[in-house]
Length: 185
Image 1: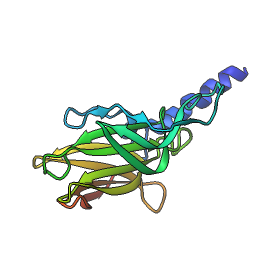
Image 2: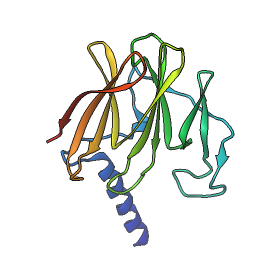
Image 3: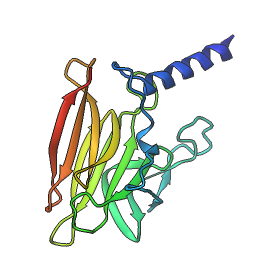
Image 4: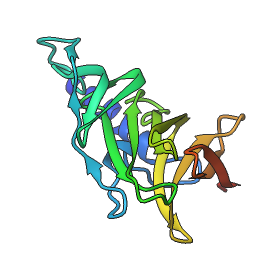
């Protein structure tokens, strides 16, 4: 009986992750699949295993680190990434033909807000450095609008019931700009 209840709780949690108040199906933001924004392999620098010998997913024996290496570049994030609950994607967001990087870190993996994530975006700028942008999202997507790759953020409005879809673009200095916002009905 206990195993059946556990199974039902897990299924309900996953169902809540996939469904929203408007019945939109979401995948995990760490599992995006876009040809224009491929997922990248991350190497954790000085990674620490916080739960050695732990048998509970999703972070059993996983490394945590604030520093990661992607494409021979080292990025330092404000918070730690967990290797099993994070991902990195590459795209050119500001049209300067230099790769920019998106780091997604899932911070809630059960309950109503399952999939809630921190997103860090490193966008190249004219000084040949990266400008860091960060936001929190319920779900992340990407799309190409007018030939430009843009990030799409879904977040609950202040009433905690309705979702807002926000599309973001990045300027040549690497700064984030709201392109479009709409409430989902």
